[in-house]
Image 1 (spheres, rainbow, N blue to C red):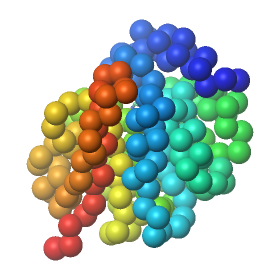
Image 2: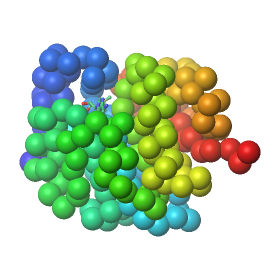
Image 3: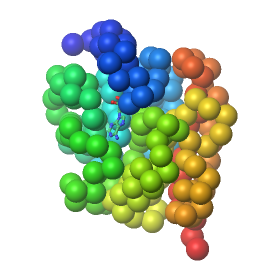
Length: 189
Ligand SMILES: C[S@@+](CC[C@H](N)C(=O)[O-])C[C@H]1O[C@@H](n2cnc3c(N)ncnc32)[C@H](O)[C@@H]1O
């Protein structure tokens, strides 16, 4: 199945659950590749993708060298889960909430790459997802998240509570809407 044909599926699911999807189109190839560029090269281990949708970022992660057996994609929407299974039969697809990631007992995770609508999530959910992510990665992990807004997608009080710092990419204008990639790390305290 071609990845191009993900657009009608995405738009159909957007009409059904606009709050959970929170994007007007799947990520562009440019944004997906920019996300993949943030993967740390000095670490090995599994890569976790949260909110994989129709698989645009999944594809970029695989093209960047992540092996299918090392890739764990979490997705809430059942139609997207079916699509991910069909398009990427060799990766691990989890029909689970991102905040339940800890229940799988993944550890030594190299990075968590998120296409979740983080800005529209309450602080309590942001904390649950970030805590589970850093528990799986260890203190040197990186949580990679795109956002369309001008500010950090992680609420300030959440970043403070978890001692997070971030770096921010240039604006990816070739995305609809233009987006930026934030990489969050735990500061050493
Ligand atoms: C903005 S779309 C991004 C899709 C895809 N990663 C992309 O970049 O094109 C957000 C995705 O996150 C999924 N999602 C929303 N809340 C979630 C949650 N709590 N756990 C897992 N997936 C979630 C939605 O179903 C949707 O597929």
